[in-house]
Length: 221
Ligand code: SAM
Image (cartoon, rainbow, N blue to C red):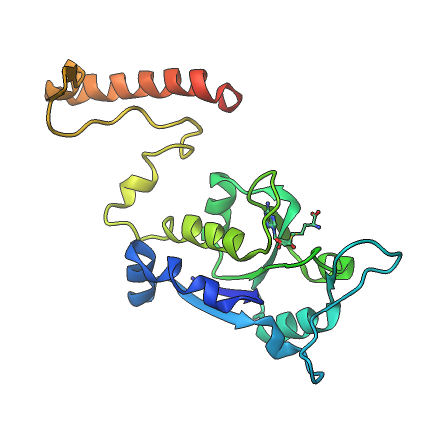
């Protein structure tokens, strides 16, 4: 999968996407990530990418010209252009699966007060929010989307089953998990998990999944 990111802060992407599973996915060519500096598409002396909002009000807005030029230069025929914005539909595991089926994705990240509305109207195929709160810019939201989508790509996780057997994949939260030791400070691992009876274990896990979801996220049921 190819992912292009348009940002004013390319350096923010260096750490998180150069570690662990995502690093290996990139090295294996499963994820091709290209980070583009929006200022490279501004052509005046000061590389201006923002301006004051018409009608007044605080802050600055991202201007249409650099973003239109960047998207039109970088997008391929089937690129899905996604704007990161608090006003977008809320990102979740189902949307991550949708995006993982895409060959080309472009994430357009904002800053300041956000985007000139014409960018949303004309360029965006989709608009995503990572939650009901406001960050200073779209780099972290873009990294959240990239990380979530990348681990769903075939071959990225050591065991592809991991992505099917976890919270939200079947609509529920995950069941409780334990590892060695079987008893720690008087707290014992449930007997059934030590039994070796796979059918019983599967039944227990399904039941626990429903119970945990009902207690903590009844909205998912
Ligand atoms: N004025 C905007 C509003 O009230 O909706 C907020 C702009 S925010 C300070 C700057 C940029 O950060 C946004 O354009 C967006 O790219 C990104 N951003 C902030 N919060 C976000 C969220 N919850 N989800 C996705 N992107 C977000």
